[in-house]
Length: 236
Image (tube, rainbow, N blue to C red; front, side, top):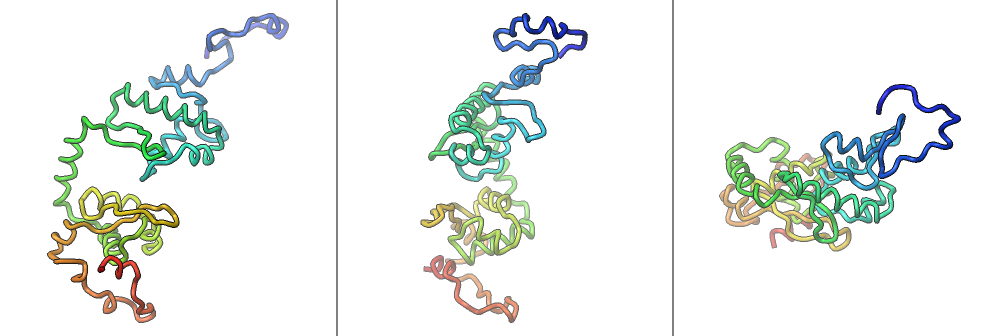
C-alpha cells in the first residue's frame, strides 16, 4: 500500500473499480500479501485479524497436531467455513507444498487430510530414527510405555487420562522408536488403539506379555486391586 493523497470523495463515485484483483490506493489484498511474502495464495485466505488467523494458517495449525487423517467436514465445522472452501484451500495448500518441494506433503487419505514425510526424505528420516534408538527414554516416555504395556490395546485419550497430561507427542516418539504400534480402532469411538511391539519384548528380554511383572506390589494401598480388562486382553 502506498502513502499519499488519493482522489477526493467527489471523484470516488466515477472511479473505475480495480480490475484483475489489483489493489488500489488505501486497499490491501490477502492474495497479494501472500505473494509478496513468497507464499502461495489459498482461496479464502486473508490477513490475520481480530477474529483470528487466516484460513491457510488455521489449516496448517490443525494439520500439525493431527495424528490421524482429519476429514473436511470436521475441519469445516471447527473453522466455521463452508466445506467446499475448506476442500479447495486444502488442495491449494497441498499443491503449494509440492511445488516448493517441502520435506513433507499434505495428502488426502482414508477420507481425511494429514501431513506425511516426502518419499524422497525417507532415508534421512530412517537415519534419524535409527540413530536415536540408543538415546535413553525420558521419564515421561517410560511412564507412557508402562501404561500402554499394561492396558493395551489402549487409545491416546486413555493413556493421557491415566497420566493426567497430553501424551500425543510421547506416543509418537515411542512409535518412531519401534516400541509401540497402531493395532486397531475402538469400535465405539473409532479412536486408534496402540499396543507394544515384538521389539519391546526383545529390549526387555521378555518372552511374552505374560512375563510382565505384577503391578500390585507397586500400587498405593487405596487403589482397588481389580484386574485390568486391557491387560487381560493383551495377555491373551
